[in-house]
Length: 588
Image 1 (spheres, helix red, strand yellow):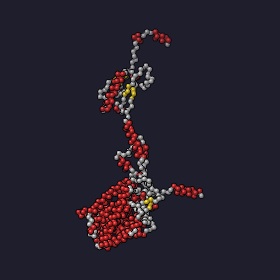
Image 2 (tube, rainbow, N blue to C red; image 1 turned 90 degrees about the vertical axis):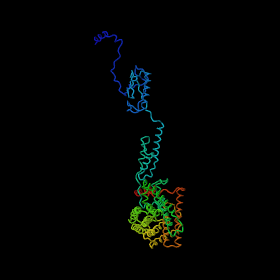
Image 3 (cartoon, rainbow, N blue to C red; image 1 turned 180 degrees about the vertical axis):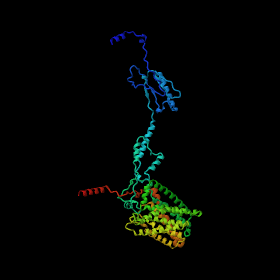
């Protein structure tokens, strides 16, 4: 080893010039960067640069917002950014040892080289975010949506047809705060919306209505009962809109019939009443009927559970006959100028009587079945509304020239009216809905005899003995109620009172028809008196309705009778006492 080393050390250099001027080390050729490629140096810090290298000024390069934008020609905005990038790179090359590489034709990418690549430093600028105003508006929308979801009142969902899904869809279509993004508060809001109740409340039994409600119309809650809906706030309008609202067009349409009879009858010609009064009242009746029908149709679509509870209510179920009876009244009260030009088609009578027949089969069948809705248990004066349609339909059919159909409905109505009349007069101990005091609902006793007398006269073509018998029964009931008018004080006004005005108009029309057969001063005075009472009653109800609607603003209060619980809820003290008694019994 030493000999070899000594020999090697003694040898003179072959090329002295090479020793004096050594050549720089030759590195393997570096392939040129590909198009749209940026060469990144080793990660170094400015505080500790590599040894032997001088610190240079860093080069800032703005990267595109998307990785796919490298080397891809972009529209005008990206072209402007590339121009700025070229100018910045040329300025940096003038200040330091940088060299701008050749740019590919048709490309927006730029490639940089440097003699000392290890000294190059690469920094990327952050992608500019949205302006602060946009961030604030987005946060505001998120908070408003969250607040709207938290304030969504779900206490009425059990009465809604689709538990509010339709309302949220409509709100979404109109641009309301219904759909939530995945931004701040979106997940929590979705959980809140998804937790709404979708189960409908069960309908109480008939006995439950009797136990929880009181009053002649079973519309007042007993003090010991609770509601399934909040009692300290006003409910939505559709929940407060009852089926008894059809009594308004029913009462006005009966007035249209009365004034048509007054204008066309011989005994009342001395009054000089024109048919324009009938035309005005008929038009008002049609407008009211359309408005009430449209409103209640919305209730059926959005709050079907409330409609179902009204149908199972022992009093309200009779008002489901009112819309069809009103249509029959409108057909009878059509102005004479219209019927003189063209007669009403026969198919209209069948169209109006079909729903009444279906309801009669359902309700009358329950009366005979002997169950919870047997007649001896649910009989009340409002049941006359379910019988009135048979006689009104018979009158309209006979007026239109039909024979068998009107006679059929007259027979059905007469049979059930006799049973109803006897049941109500008996006041059986099982009858829990008959009011102890007199009430305007008792005027429905007058409706069936008065209408049936006119209907039978239309069927037979004369006001014979049978028609007179029915008319006399109606007049006696009318007088028996009239002499006790002082007992009708102290009752809370309700829309159902409008339905009780139609018997008065029917009695006046029957008196005018009787006066055509028995024409004397007494019958004419009776016609004028009954017509005046019916008209004044409707005028008083109209004024009362306007006051309650626009002054007192309580025309549609919370409909208590549809919100009773399925079963009575025991108070907490009673539950504790019963629990304590059970414990004592177990210990003993």
